[in-house]
Image (tube, rainbow, N blue to C red; front, side):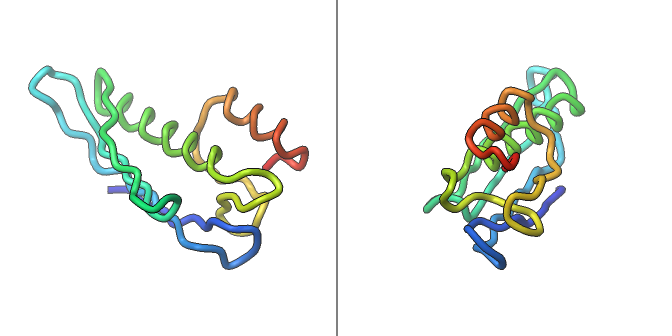
Amino acid sequence: MICRTYRFGTACPGKPVSVEIFAPREEETGDFSCRLRIDGLKEKPFDTRIFGIDSLQATMLALQLAGTELYGAGDHPGPHVFLYAPNDNLDIPTTTTVLDHVKRRDPRGG
């Protein structure tokens, strides 16, 4: 399992948000899946499985979905997710579409 704790709020220290991506496993179909769990953003944890044609794709897609969920949390100028300080880079892969949206929402780059 890989994990990281982010923060959610408008200032440090913020509320902890844990992201956990579990090791890929092969399914009966031959595809692979990774479990993704994000706890601390909403009342209930976000918990799902991401599928890919191999273990690398399943892991990358889980990372991208985690990034999408984190970057999409909160509204500017309200609370949002950060790693070390508000408005920092979350240092997690996501799509350019999501990053473009964040930049439009927050001119500082969110």
